[in-house]
Length: 317
Image (cartoon, rainbow, N blue to C red; front, side):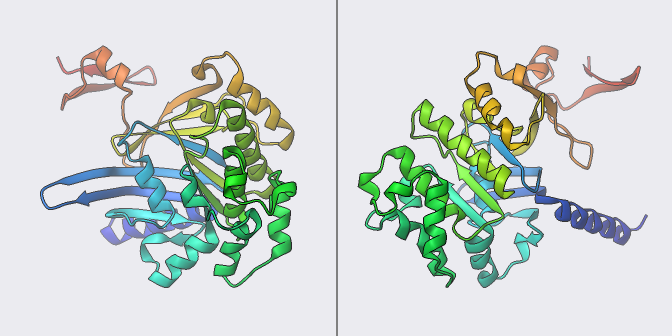
């Protein structure tokens, strides 16, 4: 097969993935360079997120999860690889197209309240602001969004008159203002208590189910993970594994039972099952606990064999 044929097949595959999925990342690389230092934040990351899914991304500090979120939000550009969101190739957008993408296609919810809200504006005025930027101010829709997030009686309150949880509800309404296809949330419950966390996650799940909005949460909190059906774990700049809920739930009537899972005494492993992620080239990351058990962490060579329908990995010696 020629190089041109391989390229054509990959392009067709990407186009098919883009039509079925909200997010498709292929071999994503991000390198940060300073005068004396080069840091590789993403090292060939692959990720696919179906349209309408609410999923979480977890990882240790420095794993690359925030870098990924910034790329998906159009706040940063990859050094290599491809990233498609809602059919748009983010690496090929012009500056004007990227500004419109950030305003109309994606909504943001940040842990830092200062990035969500303007303190001297009321809740309603904050929600109207993204509409004004696009020239589509709709006071009635702004009011209905605040009602949807449970703040109908506080639409004229300013930042200092709202609790932390209420401020995040306003932030969610702002993220919905221009009817985005995708919401990106970076530690959206990091500054609130457990009860408020559950309420906010229940609200986000409701948005995903009722509006069909794709929601990607970046978090280190396993409680957040319990509210979603899929969790992607990033390690060393790559998607290392995914946790899939054992009983997949998508209907609105299941929202309460999803929240019950977050407060149940069951260990995380009993609600989700872990799967290693293999890229198109057949590469995967072996869980660290397994590598340590076999004594192969850091080894360049291991024995791989096919035995009784299973792939077996052994230390080279």
